[in-house]
Image 1 (spheres, rainbow, N blue to C red):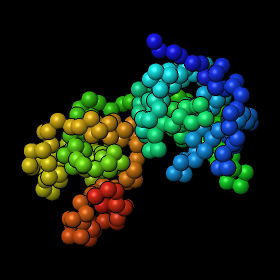
Image 2: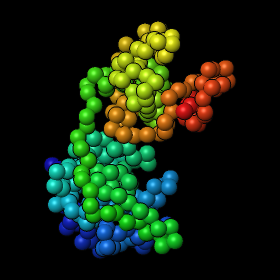
Image 3: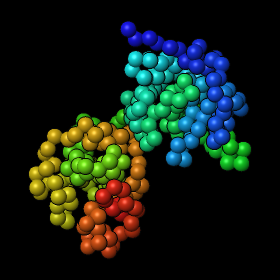
Amino acid sequence: MQRFICFLLCFALASPVFAAAPDSVGIWVGEARADRFGASFTVGGEVYVPASEIALALGAERVVFSEYTGEAAIYADSLLISAKVGERYLTANGRLIYCPGGIIFRYNRVMIPASALAKAFGSTISYDEEARSLRFSLSGKPIEPADWTDDDLYWLSRIVNAEARGESLEGKIAVANVVLNRVRSKEFPESVKKVVFDTRFGVQFTPVSDGSIYLAPSEESCLAARLALDGADVAGESLYFASNAAAKSCWAERNRTRFGKIDHQVFYL
């Protein structure tokens, strides 16, 4: 039987069983200190904060944790957030917010990236390096539901699967970023499907000509496509990419600026 633990009673009011970590950052919401026990820490430059304490300070009505599933549910006005320990994203009003370092359980708390929580609540965050403090604003509008279509997801997940099979989740998101950047650019067609099948200057994506675009996408390719559609960005404004093997002789290497290398692909602005 699932046991549900209310963070408000069991986490926010519990006595600390640890000392604040050396890299702990003071967390403020508006003018009030929000992390009573100094549980924050950093992973890969991202400040992680206790989901319960900070969400409640931002105006959440309640935070509930399921020991059975490892999932925290945050209920606020016009906002529902789900954060499952071990996943690399949290869900807010149906949108997936990318968390590269994952959702972490530490200090008897579900810890999530401050930037992801701020995005869900529509808050802004500022960091004072000298004081080692991070502040959430109290003003803001909760994240809106997704505005992409099933057709967008259908074709984006397939081009990601065909072009980035065997790449990491980050590498798959990067390929999706290129397609979506083209959709937003005046240089390319205005929809995911049209970008994928664009032939104005020759076939743009090899999977279209070899037929692999029609293969059923993997679960991770679908996740990468959804994350990119919901705002995950690892490739900046890149409009082109090429495999490491092809990069030295490709058109983009000679004519575009390198953004960087992700897994086995090179990306260009």
